[in-house]
Length: 120
Image 1 (tube, one colour):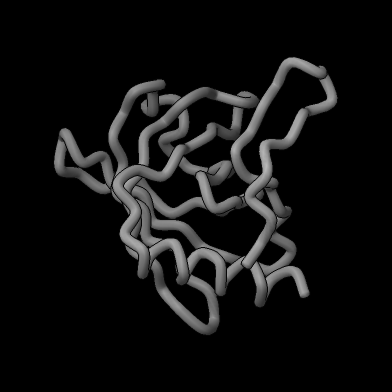
Image 2 (cartoon, rainbow, N blue to C red; image 1 turned 60 degrees about the vertical axis):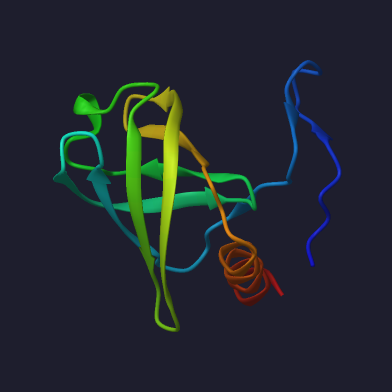
């Protein structure tokens, strides 16, 4: 399993529970606004950790706000993961950060398997 120690960012004051890994292979991401019950679109995962991911290139990026509850479907050539998350910040004009919510043990293991496949 990937290291789960708290990591310090470049700024020295940023702290993460889980290290992030860049998504080097094409991983598509279908995003749904759970409160509105509507599909927001297809984007890409820029990086991922056991705690969340960064979404980029989502057509309706400007419609997403911090605190929005999202349904996420990560799709690559080997698996599809259905997850729930909350938008925690907008990183750039074309990306935002999502923290996973209410992960089951199975979902945690599936994310860990995805990380191992993408980065070993």
